[in-house]
Amino acid sequence: MTVTGGTTAAPARLTADDTPLDISRVPAREAAERELSEPMYHQNDPNLLQRSLDRLWEWVGDLFDAASGAAPGGVIGLVVVALLVIAAVAALWWRLGTPHRTPGTTGDSLFADGPRTARDHREAAARHAAAGRWNQAVQERTRAIVRALEERALLDPRPGRTADEAAAEASRSLPAHADDLRLAVRVFDDVTYGGRTADEPAYRRIEELDTVLERTRPTLGPAASAGTPA
Image (spheres, rainbow, N blue to C red):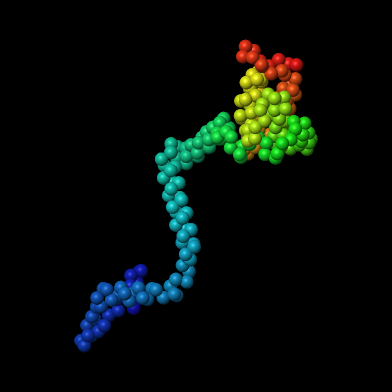
């Protein structure tokens, strides 16, 4: 059998009068397929992994070409759109902060390590601050604020209370500091549940709030609009 120009010619048989007799196409094709299936013809073929990778990259290239063609400005337009989407998501996350959580769940409890005094929490916060561990310092100073309000009977001691609940309850008797209390517990939530990192200015603001609240008398009647410094 002879292969010429990529086409396999079917072998011919001679009749008694030396006239070539062509073999039908089906047996010829089968003979050619058997011939070409020999291992010697496939020694340099890519393996299965290589063929799969080639097809994957072809698919990715086709997908990218289709997306870039649909976006204004081609590839550059596609990149710009992707960057704008990423920026919008980042800005939204930064603006909204951590997702809203159901108040009162055990995982959000402000005090997770048993009862300690406000002084204990302040001392722990000071140690963390001295070592530059601002996340832990923020957490302990916020706990000190809430514990001090409990010790002054401005908050009822309640297991499982969250930082948000404590700020909301304390704002009723200390309305002049309601915004500062909300900001303090927002920082506490961000570093405790949101995976963010506090810094020294954030800690110092909470430390100052703790000091101010210690000198502030609570509002006892509905007619008063703010706490009065002692």
